[in-house]
Length: 97
Image 1 (cartoon, rainbow, N blue to C red):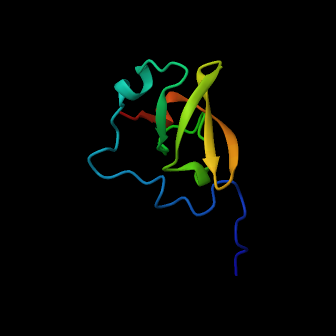
Image 2: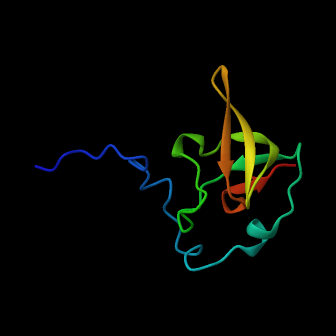
Image 3: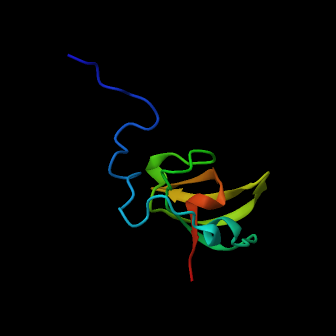
């Protein structure tokens, strides 16, 4: 019997899975979207891009961009009663209206 994995990406099979129509497509508008400080964004993980992917517990959360770190953005997210800082690349972000 195999031991259960306890890695940082455990239990992500359904979260990181893409539909048949989304496979082998590059969403260039998600990568090139210009964000500025104070913008509200949703964290939506892209399983095809592993670089700059935040932890799966932040999937579906919304936050506010507070700065940049290289190509990535620093996002302030409320997780319960605590405010947390998430560093994510723009492939894993979607703008909120």
